[in-house]
Structure formats: structure tokens, C-alpha cells
Amino acid sequence: MKSPYRSLFIHNSLDGLREGLSHFSGPSRVALLLALAPGDPLHVIDPQQLLNGHEPRLEELYCSTAGWKTPHPALACLRSGDIIPAPDPGLTGLLAFGGQSSSAFFQMWFTEQHPDLCSPGPTLRWLEHAAGQLAQDTAISGTLRNSTSAFVLQSYAFHAVRDYIVDQRNYTLGPDTQLRVYPTLDAILGISCTREEGAWPCGRLAFVEPSMLCRMSFMAGFPRMEQPVLRNLRHCRKFLQAVECAPRTLISDGRSIVGISCDALPPGTIIADYQGRHGFLLLDDEVICSFEEGVFHSTNRRANLVQFEEALLESGLTEDHQLNLMRIVSHIVRHARERKHGCTLAVDLRAFPRNLAGQTLQTPLDLRCEDHLRLATSLSKIDGALHISGTGELHNFACLLDGRTVPGENRARGARFNSALRFTAANDDMIVIVVSSDRPVSIIQRGIELTARCEWSPLPGFAPQPPVLEDWLRG
Image (cartoon, rainbow, N blue to C red; front, side):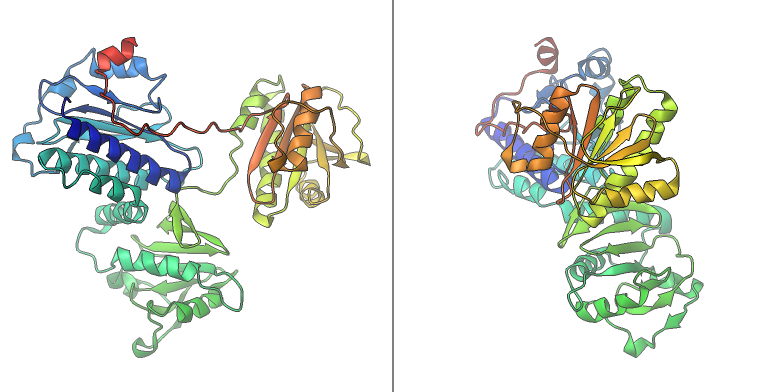
């Protein structure tokens, strides 16, 4: 890859893809393995070290074997921009898509698989589109597309969701369908931003393939000439009140609201599950993504407690106690995030829990009991921390956590966070979970935030010459 032009548009495409995925899924990195022509060495474009730690697998796949170097028999017949997919390399924690094309012999794109991903489908369609854009770019000798692909990839979230839904519906129903997905997604996002008397939408709106409506039974159907059309978002928002907090579903054929039903939905149905300020987009039983403020996001909106689980594994507690603590903490954290109130949980790993300054209970509550767990969930709203033992018992609530000042304090994070840092720095056998009222969850142990995320260094403003894979592996 000695051409400065090619290095530049590849660099710009990588930056556009990274920026778009970061808005859709949170901070993301991307990497690319590329050989432009048959016989070319495989180059590594990985400006943010996404592939670090995967060297043994990459060496096994692309150095020890030469399968990727063999041209596919149909390669000569491909149109510009078409891709013959290659097998997923299966790198842990990464999503990948790549293959062979007539203008870019072999390419493999990588990005992170975030733990709170609803579905990998839209992200994989995004990587597939990046591969197609690169194949088209390399087929053009001019400079007109230098920045075009970067802009396209940066704003591809809506189209990635649509492409995945279309692919899945084609697989289920075949390509000859009447429900148009673009207008459907527009209506879903439009209704999500429409409030009725100050209230955000709640309830389920299902978009059924028109040919399958005859299979359904309706509690209430509307005459054809009086059905609310989807273009009238406010009218549809009013009708959504009929299914709010109920097992009923509002049914649409993609053009208008046709009725209300409790019946099972036919295959290929797109469902918008509105839950106030946010909601979830489903295809049949699969959650595709979430949406909020008129934008799609990949997150399932669940708290990421992976670091807490890892800390429990190192704690020496029995497996039963670890599972109980995970269930208890997950329940309280989920409730706090849904109700948008802050809370603090102090998990005591000692065999005999310490005494903390706070409201003491005459008898500890066994949080394995559902009634006690619901009570503890309500007590978490009171200022101060819940003191939970390693056996899953609540000993105190409204506890004060204090300690001496420590490095890493951040006044922008508030009193809960900084108090937890100080307290755990002085008490090694405590794990503190801090839930902020604006949803972030922090896991703190030994004065260190285990959930802290390093900011990735931005891509450089120039396009460096990418190394060959063999040199990268040695280097």
C-alpha cells in the first residue's frame, strides 16, 4: 500500500466507522487486515491497539495457513463493491466481517463486542457496509470519494438497523414483502419523541406484514377509512394510550393503525416497546436495539456488573453466596436505574461483618427472601449505603462511608463516589457499588474504580504506512 491516496481514504474510513460506532455503542475501536491484490502481504491497520492480545490466533489463521490467499472461484465474476464473505476469525470479545472482492483482494474488519449489546446484527451490517465501501473506493482511481465513505460510515446507525431487519425478514418471509422498513423506523422514532399531555409514550406497537393480518384476531378493529395514518404521529401517540401498562398491542400494517389485539403476533413482526423516555425495538422475540430521544442505540440499558462478578470470584466466597449476591445487587441496581434515584451498596466480604455508622436492624434481613429484597430496594432510596454481608443479609441502611482523602478523587462525580473511594481505600474487604441518579454505575474496591474507562487516543491526523502482519506480530 504505497499509494498515499489509498492510505488516506482507508484512514478516513476507519475514523468515520469508529466515530459512528462510538455514538451507537459507546466508545469503540476498529481495526482492519487488508491485502489489496492477490500475492500482496496482509497489512495491519490498528491505530488504537484493538488487536493486541490476539496475536496467537491471528498468526495461526493468517500466517501458519494460506487459505485466505486462495482466490474464490467466483471472484472474477463479482461486480465492483460486492464481497464474498470469509469465515469469522472468532477473536474473543470482537465482532468481525470481511471477505474477498475484485478490487480489494482480502479485508477483515474488527470492532469491540460491548457487554451491553442488544444484538450484534446491526454492528455486523455496519462492518459489512464498511467492507463494501472500501471495495468501491479501491476500484476508483480518482479522489472524489476520499471523504465520502467516512461521512457515510459515521452516520450509518439508522441504516444498519434497517439492513439487519430487512435481512432477517427476508430469511423468515422471503424477499417479496409489503412492509417498508424505513418508514416504519421513522414512525417508531417519531412517536418516541411525541408526548401526550406531558407524558412519554408507553405500550407496544407492532408492525405486521399486511398479508398476515388475516391470521390475527382483534379485540378492536378500525374501519379502513378511519384508521389513523402513521404520518400523523400525534394521532398515533394518542391511540398508544389504549395499550399502556396492559397486555394489549396496537397493530399497524405499516401505513396506519388497524386495531388492538392480544393475539400472538405472526413471524416477521417489528415491535416497538415504548417504556417512557426510552424503548426497545424488537423483531419477533429478538431485541435489536434500544432508542431514546429519536436515536437508535445498541445498549440493552442494563447495568454492567462484570467487574463486581470478577471481584466476587476472587473473594473466596462460596459459589452459592456469589450467585445470591449477584442476584441481590442486580435487582437493587436495576430498580435504582429505572426509578432514576442514586443509591450505594456496601458489600462486606468479611466472615463477621463490621459495624458501620447507620441505622441498625434488630435482626438482619435475609435478602434471599423476595419480601426482604423488595424492602431493601425501597430502603436504598434513603440517603446512605446499604450494608450487605457476604451471605446476602442486610445489616444496616443509611450508613455513612468515610475515610481519608485518596488519589483519584473527582469532585465532578459527587459525594457518593468520592466517599466510596475513601472508604474502600481503608477497608480492603469491602466492595462498594455506587449508582448515580443519571444512571452510571461504579464498582469500587481498594480505593480504585474498577469500572473506570480509559479514553482511547484519537486517531492521528496523518495516514501512517500500515505494517505487514508478520512484522506487526514480531513487533
